[in-house]
Amino acid sequence: MHCKEHLDYLFNPRSIAVIGASTVFGKWGFNILSRLLTCKDGKQIYAINNKFDEVLGLKSYKSIVDVPGPVDLAMISVPLSYVCSTMQECVEKRVKTAIIISSGLAETGAEGEKIERELVNIARNGGIRFVGPNCLGHFNTASNVLTVPFLPSIKKGPVALISQSGNSSQSVFNHGLEMGLGFSKFVSSGNEADLHFEDYLEYLAQDKETKIIMGYVEGFREGRRFFNLAKEITKKKPIIIMKSGRSDAGIKAAHSHTAALAGSDAVLDAVFKQCGVIRVDELSELTDMAVALLGQPLPRGRRVGVLTMGGGMAVISVDALRKNGLELPKLSQRTMDILNSFLSPRWSYGNPVDPAGDFVSYPILWPMIEDENLDAVIIIGGVGMASSFAGWAGIPSEMKYNARELRRQMEEKELEDLNKTISMMKQYQKPVLFTTMVWGAKRPGKIFKTLKKRYLYPYAVPETSAKVLAKLVEYHEYCKSV
Image 1 (cartoon, one colour):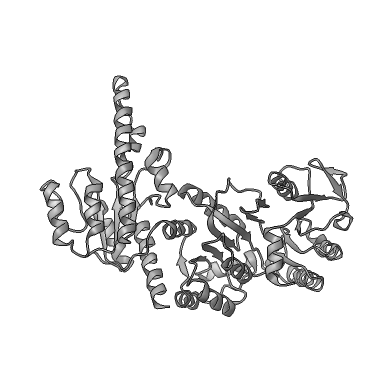
Image 2 (tube, one colour):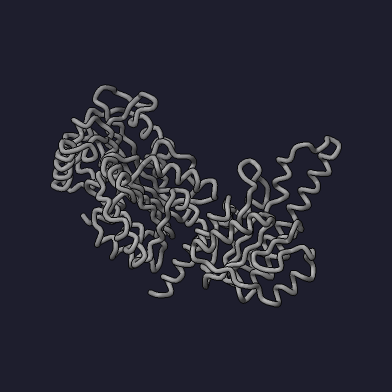
């Protein structure tokens, strides 16, 4: 059976057996089975436990070989000493694909490596491909398959994640949820004793539901294959990767975590650039980049205009843009004339544009989008201002109705201005990266809902906007060169 067929069974199983199913809340066998029962959708779910006749309302089988029907996917969560014998029983049952949650193998040393090799031999000789060991599970939002116990509610969308770390992926999903990101597929690849990062990458490249592929990587098993795959995939789909283990200590930690071959960081950096992979430094940047790629036009060049509601942020943004290799050109004479026609004489008369206390962001932003000297714009503050009023303290009770009405009117007007801005971004093919200090509970209302829906959710600081924009530029330059 071809690897793609095994991965089809992984992501679209008709029947799933949980080996090590448990009645104890908090145990993996309980968590996985209970999660699967919430997304049954016509799939056959089997509980395997040799101590109980029933688990979570399901008939419990002593062994997977006792299951009456075929099994496409086996979830294995058993003590280390039973992993190989359990895999042998899966072979007897002719299971198609397995996920091994159990840990304590190659990541622990020589004895664990020996058991892992035996496990691979049993599976390969028996025609089974497996995920892990030492992993968290997977999901496919299209077929409503979810084996990961600890995730927030996942929104269906166009982004897939391959992660060699289970726990790190949860940070990605939580940040993605905040940014309005939806996901197609996820796999926690663990030690990659059998199926490798490259196998999932090749599969997702052909997946119609996936438009962007993200990866958390501690090391590559098949470096040359990764390069050849990525070089072709990035022509059609962006690949965003956080590669950890940059320092000597990090490399050592990566090996003990997933037994990954971390490799030279400098070499990997060059490889990523050659094959168009977008490399990020932090977990949150995976989703920051994915949102930008979905919601923004790719910038045609490095010339950036900055609109800020304060001088301090202007200085910070200039430093951040220059640090990331971006340019701040002069505004065109046309733009200068338009801004001079309505701004206070106190405005900055240049790029960055600081209106010196005038909160009129959109009429300033529009000529900047039209400006022939600019390829992109970063706006800092001045967006969603009405939403922040909800958090203001000290409004007298007799004024609260007026404040609510003012907020409603401001939101309606800003929504109109925002929709015009989004239309202009598309017309002129220029990205506009929104940055606002309004955060958390103060981000309610129609403006932030619209920004989230359109994959334009604001970043918290100018440094993030500058870094994201620089990577958009680099990706566009790569796409033009191939």
